[in-house]
Amino acid sequence: MGRYLLRCGALGYLAVLLLAPVGLVFYRAFEHGFWPAWHAIASPDAMHALKLTLVAAAIAVPANMVFGILCALAIVRYRVPGFRLVNALVDLPLALSPVVVGLSLLLLYGRNGWLGGHNVLFATPAIVLATIFVSLPFVVREVVPVLREIGTEQEQAASTLGASGFEIFRRITLPSIRWAVAYGVVLTTARALGEYGAVRVVSGNIVGQTETTTLFVANRYQDFETQAAYAASIVLALIAVVTLLLMNRLRPKEETR
Amino acid sequence: MAARAEALPLPRSWPSGGAALAVAFSTAYLSLIVLLPIAALVWATHAHASWQAVSSPQAVAALKLTVLVSLGVAVFQAIAGTAVAWTLVRDSFPGQSVVNALIDLPFALPTIVTSLTLLALYGPRSPVGVDAAFTRWAILLALLFVTLPFVVRTVQPVLVELDREMEDAAASLGASTFAIFRRVVLPNIVPAILSGVALAFARAVGEFGSVVLVSGNVPFRTEVASVYILGRIESGDPAGAAAVSVVLLGIALVVLLGIGAIRRRATRHDG
Image 1 (cartoon, rainbow over the protein chains, first blue to last red):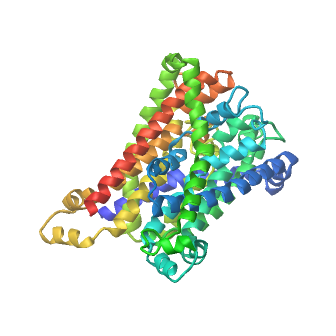
Image 2: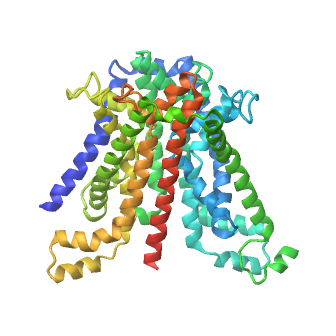
Image 3: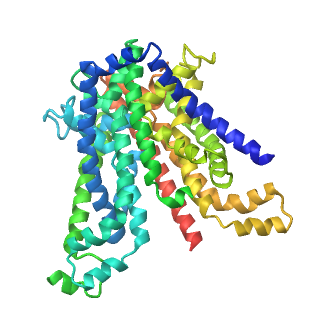
């Protein structure tokens, strides 16, 4: 009896909190049929926004993947004095408000900033930098526990057999962390495609120029073009669903059961 | 070659060249991407003596609202998240794996889409007749949505690993279900709950995208800290924005240090 109560409570909570609102957005987007939604998505501004979002992710995700692997190796395998500080700093983007991230970049690259005057702000470079910042921790966070778990025995064996450092990395370390890397990359991609707050502050939010898809959604909604806003939301929601499926496939097995 | 000869006692697995590269690259990358902008932020508050901005009534109201609502949300998720994790691990019902996958939806869904979904359901055209838009309830709902995965995903693996023999032993000694949960299960999952709660709190304090469209942003009423910061930026007062930002930065750092301490304590008790 108690068990059914708990089950109904937990599932009811999830249904009210998650399923109902998301289902309704799909309904709203296609309320007036398929074609109005399609035309909203296929408009030049929407396509440009989608392209910009994809460009930012295409730069941020590989950069953070390489960083994530190297940083995890540095944290787990080499005890460098003071590196614990790096370990703590890696998590900062998880806990920091995206608006604060945007403001920090604004102050650094702004007119009076230390790195000002390079046409970074209100253009693609700023959007890319903001995206890299907010999606930075995920690969590191996934790879670190796996590296700890696999230990160094195989790597040491390879080393005594005369393998070079790069060979050990390519043939022993990389294959054993590849699923963690893949999972981290999925998380990084989801975060990169969905970023709004930091991008809003640094991009200048110029329609057709520095407007990403998330900005497109917000701007259309505020201009009372709700049809276009919901249609673009559907594109992002579908990407989220694909992400969800990939996450479920790649999640470390001990967490599921 | 020389590196390999030296590496024979093998205190570490890699020759030092690779190690130096990994350390140097990640330090440089982190400094350029994260550290330098944060330093610029902190410097901006120093340069303009903008501490007056933090103590302005509107800023104080925004910070107070943010911290209070976030605390409430985090505490609520401690209970709801633990119940959901328990249902996913110990219960079994058809469609469980789908529900398990759904837990990550708030993470995968862009926050601005979350805003729109909440407005669709609880906004002016609500099909269920609940118009919570532009009230504090809307902020609460948005934060509950985005912080859902944290406690579930930290408690779930611990519950899976938990040895059920202890619970069986307690049951055979006549302990009630509630007593078993409180005295056997709970002490084992408290560190996980606490780090989940801390993550949820940090996320709630900094949340922007899911709140900005639904809260109405009325100063002193429904304006949270991140929206206040954006307002300062857009009205050309980056120094004031930076001052409130540094408060949020401080909260984020304290939470991260707290989580680190919880984790270290938990692993020490394991060993």
